Each structure stands twice: as C-alpha cells, then as structure tokens.
Image 1 (cartoon, rainbow, N blue to C red):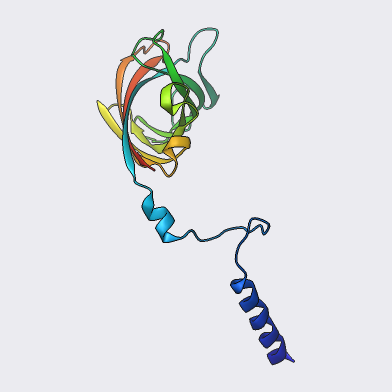
Image 2 (cartoon, rainbow, N blue to C red):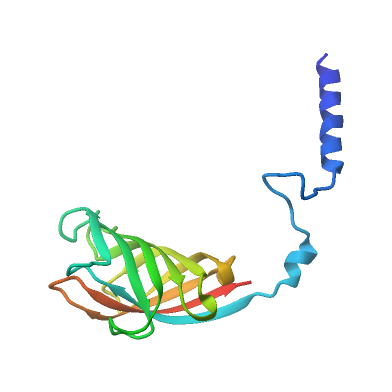
Length: 184
C-alpha cells in the first residue's frame, strides 16, 4: 500500500512540475528566468541629505518610548524630517521613520532601524532601509543599507553619518547623511 501511495504521489508531483505557470495559478513563489534578471543593470545612487532629530518643543519628531534618561535600553520612535541643508527650515525631501535605542552598556552607541522615505524629485515614493550600529561619539559613522523600495528595489549599500550640530540641553540634532546605494 505504501509503495502505490508513493508512486501516486510521484506522478502527482511530476504533473505539478510539468504544468506551466500562468496568471490564473497563484503560487507562493516562482523562479525567474536568469536571462530576465541579468538584463537589468545595477545602478549606484549617491544621496546627500540631513536628518533633523527634534526631541524638544510642542511637536517633537523623536519620542522616547521606554527608558530613563539616555542610558542603556532607552528607545526612541522617530518621524524626522530629511532636508536638503543642515538648517531646520531647509527644504524637506523626505522622512526618517523608525527607532533608535541605546544599545551599549558602557558606550554611546545606538542601534538604528530606520527607513528613509523620499518625497521629492525622481525618488518621490521610494525608500531605503538602514539597520546598524551608530557609535555617536565618532565624527563619521558607517551603517549598512539593507534594502529599498521603488527606484531602490533590491537596494544595498552604506550610509555615512556626521553630526553637524547637537544641543546637549534639548537632545536636538542635525545629522548629515551621505548614502551610496546599489539598486536596479
């Protein structure tokens, strides 16, 4: 009985594999032809913008969601403006949305999980995602770009962050980002 069941299962699987995939058949996944993926040329885009982190005032763009002070484990949710220049009133080109948390017990290092969504120019509606360690006491910090959407689909690369100004009384800051992202 088991051998006839195995034989029937083999024939059924063979028939399924032989059926061409059409638009009427839905599937969890399918393989793309290598020729299709190879004809797409990768591009490298260089982006330059400023991250405006505002913890103070009536309308903060970074909100503490857990933790005391700025110690280990303190976590912030953000919806920060991305601007063309370092000034707060510079033209907004997108939003940085996500979280950052104090991830080091004996150092000033953040874990950043942020999506940069762009609202201007040819990148309007596209985004890139960054996840990494931000050792904030370094002049320049490098963090990985791990994905993207829209024009940045299949994005990967790196972001260099440099603090332009920081107010220790309020925690407000302007951070320059130079991003290189490889995408299709």
